[in-house]
Image 1: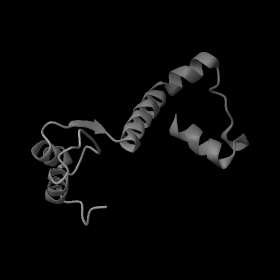
Image 2 (image 1 turned 30 degrees about the vertical axis):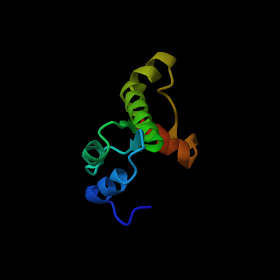
Image 3 (image 1 turned 45 degrees about the vertical axis):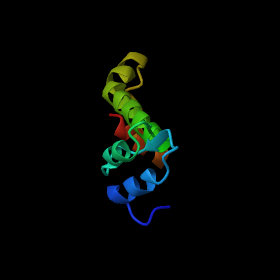
Length: 96
């Protein structure tokens, strides 16, 4: 663990480890630039958590945009929210 989230700290640590060839990182905080300066030969990739978060968000956005049309096609527009559990109600209301 580094003592802080400053790009300069990350850059110094990376520069001290020149054999690193792949850096998994998030997209923010100037880490891309720090990595490029410290390890110009290294390949930069999205870390697993952010990759899954971004993919999940994109999928849910697509589903939300299409849900009304999907319900019309499958004739599920007559769902009575009173019959749903609290979790189902939150999910149902989020996709309207």
